[in-house]
Image 1 (tube, rainbow, N blue to C red):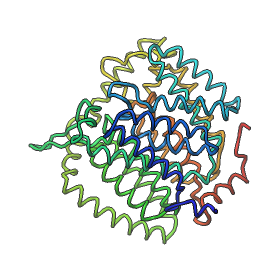
Image 2 (spheres, helix red, strand yellow; image 1 turned 90 degrees about the vertical axis):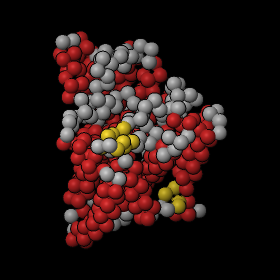
Image 3 (cartoon, rainbow, N blue to C red; image 1 turned 90 degrees about the horizontal axis):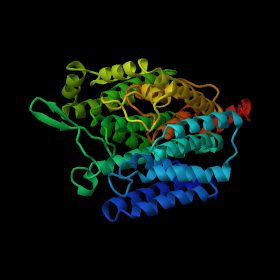
Length: 444
């Protein structure tokens, strides 16, 4: 049977099937019995033993959006963290061929995390295994499967958003959330949609990633266009309901970069204008109906646009400036945050946790993993879009220890390595032409 017969809507049927199984398992754990979560987790772990390594990453990328509710009770550690650790250990045993250029900084950073983990041993080992999962993905996943991993993540964001709409009407779901994010617009009270995340800004981050990746696939003419446009519009609808300033900024950046890319040819300009006019009119009309314009105007131009972040950053800056040891070596990931709360900035959070020394090791390690395999040697503005948006978003969110970070790195790497230079040929053909021109493993 050829590959085309194993696809539906231009994507792997196996990927769709696994996403459905995980989604039904999570819904079953939520609606029927919480122990169904354990069976679902075991299903994902069993994927580590299959011949095709893509299977485990389909599961992980899909279920990452359900982390908050993927637990036996609201106060326990998410089962997803244990799945990450188990998957990392199994894949090391099965495919543990590391290059020294990446292995040494990974070992050094792992020691750094363990020394400062305190009682947060799960966080430390989850972070270590996340880095290893990122590395093994880069080393083993082929370009032909990029679209399927992207779609698995997008489906996860859509699925979790759909479940999140039951948050107020389903007691067993609302039990996982301690507070609601609200906005006052005159006499009206507006609830900020967070999907299955605690914070609307963290939720917005996952939605922005999904939007950018859908745009990349659309412009690359990958997958069924009706499906991709449906997913894209759905993501925009969910994202705008978060009333996040970060989401609005990210969407504007994505829109500008997309327009610049599409203006490479007259046909693309006309297509871009038609698409933007159609989509824009519909979105603007809907935003006016829900009062989005007035609410966001008040959030941006009235009061503190940073929502207190500058004061928080000032507190962390003063602490690190007055604590040379903490600035150089960090307080450790097991340390409590300052009294003002989390740093709300991944760069500052990294220095606070592992110091400037640990942050340099981390940065070197991540860059080394990003560069250890390339499929696209001639990147365009579209390739850098996700990376740029990612770097902007983590400047206002503390993401250093979250479950999603290594998977966001995976998605950024995918965005960088999809060849969108040519309009001719499949994604695989374009990618493989670059592989043939360039060494795919710089450290190998």
